[in-house]
Image 1 (cartoon, rainbow, N blue to C red):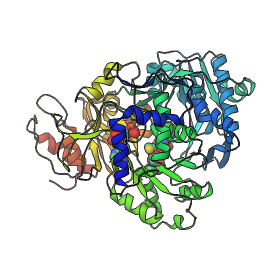
Image 2: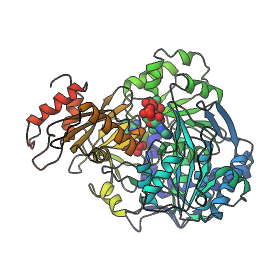
Image 3: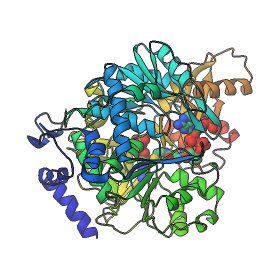
Image 4: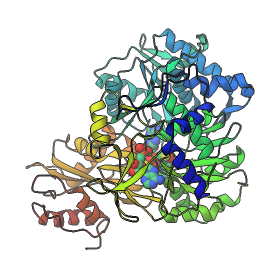
Length: 634
Ligand code: COA
Ligand code: AMP
């Protein structure tokens, strides 16, 4: 089927207007476009300019109108609360239109931002869809982030309203969200006049009269409201993701291109159509949750499974497989980390043997590099195609994948397969020249990017151009390095910047360093991602102390770990820190993080020609060895 894949790829690249106009037939438009691809303001390309639609209408109302009202739209499975129920499209429409009605009553209108800080419950999807219904722009903040990170995002997005819940439930216990929200609102410069809070039975939050509204009673009393027509190019959402500095990047997604691209990907990549059940075991706080828990499956009239639990420990490593069998899941998507966790706890797949997985056609993996061992284990245990695919928050949907719905190709371990139609992916050297097959370089995508990819960064077009478009004019810089083999298969090997990937979660080492430097004892800090068997990478901090610090190492490290947890959140998984006398730097003062990472992971490295003081590498190696890394000298 490689020929078919290539044929589709060629069609999309050579005739993007025709290709995407055809794909756009799957969407209900209130007004069709003037231009499919609008290059008037290049490199700020737009898709379907002049068109109007409503994303919520396409994801909910039209399925009710077309007779799918009784089909389950969202199947909620929550092992942490022992709750499972389905919400039909008709019920979803009622919930969303009433919530939107209440939001409108409180003054939320088209173009306003609404921050959503919620756990993995159906109401989070209602919240996103209610924003889409009103043409308001949602910005979901992942629940594992601390108050300070929430405050940063509130100040950048400047929301009219915040939607939240009293708590999330983690294996470690109930995580109270409302106190974090209150603290974030205290820290933020931007003032928010309304917060709608869903009180869950596990923790009752106090509501501040005049500002906070009780979700259940307000929604019950609200009237339904209809979908508002928006421009295809109007933003649907802003999703913050880690950049190289502590200030996160607000990725802006439009309405029209997003709906078209996601619908196309559901069928062609994930092999999902109306009536099928799809499950992405991620979190709505990440792009996977936006694209493939909420919008993608609903846009095509499928059933989406929304899971509040973990791959292991809630209660055992069989949870995924039982859920797939019970709810007839056809395609399942998770991160390699989750499979590694299951493999660790159930190495011989005993739990897999207890269920009938005949419903499952494909397992999709993304979010981090999929190591071949994990792929082989899953293939062997499941006896199903295991599909590694590669994409980013910025692209919103897969850049390289095996298109299981139309043109499956040979699976090669370690590769997310071929560039998807619409993406002209190239591997280039520092000068922007394409490198030969199997040679490593920077992975770039020729502009224009296809529909559904980022339009800009919220309120910061200059940063968008600077971060992604300036290094190689005419190309989008993915920030990933890798190579293509002689068959055109892509291999994504590492980041070229200071972003690390911890259990499929993208984090900025720059942000960790900022936080460590807030401690009174710390003069300077460097954070690197080191290899971890379970999480892929974990952060490791090296700090240089100010003169005259009298804390014991143990006390200092405890305080630093607590500080990171308090400032960034538990998701940072920061547990490794050590003091060093001096950090390795170039003569111009740049910290040699790449070299430190190689020492930590026992990889060969060349002594950097520009190093200021070679002895600093020995200091670092000693510290890393004490922490259980860098055990073999190179
Ligand atoms: N709200 C509040 N806290 C959260 C949270 C949320 N939504 N999500 C995670 N946390 C907390 C966890 O409770 C944990 O806190 P702890 O330090 O008190 O134990 C911490 O953040 C780290 O969580 P997590 O990354 O889930 O690690 P873990 O060690 O608890 O579990 C795995 C390990 C592998 C099971 C888990 O990382 C996992 O399921 N990974 C898959 C990731 C994934 O799907 N990524 C999406 C990208 S596609
Ligand atoms: P995020 O924006 O959080 O989705 O993270 C995107 C980054 O995760 C990418 O730029 C890659 O560095 C990494 N990534 C995601 N999927 C893969 C994959 N299949 N293979 C290798 N790296 C991946």
